[in-house]
Length: 174
Image (cartoon, rainbow, N blue to C red; front, side):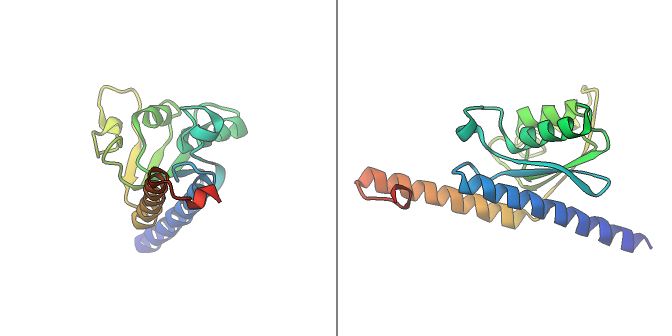
């Protein structure tokens, strides 16, 4: 029976990460770095968000923060101890602290972020024993899909910059 439970948890997690990947695609289509987040409670969708700091002129509008704000508003509480967050990229320090302050039960991320990730890549903020709250963290779920989306996005950006530098029209100019 334990195997059935882990299979059902795995498929539930993959479903939630699939929703986060859909949010990341919305960010990409808006010209934002493609990161998406979904908050679940007892296996049910609560809220979602995607990166929008450029379009909102808000440096805090990371996918995790957008989703946290929506979930807190929907549930009527800034504490979300029964909720899990699924995000397509390892959280940064700002997002990790917001998740800890919200008392999120579990954070599941897809791709690692070797430049700003604080769930083990640069350091592990979630593991600091000095903090008053700790959350379970799992990385690597559907990592390849998220990594590929990020690679494609930045390759397109580099190509557009190269074309602008060369004085050529880019796809973004059309």
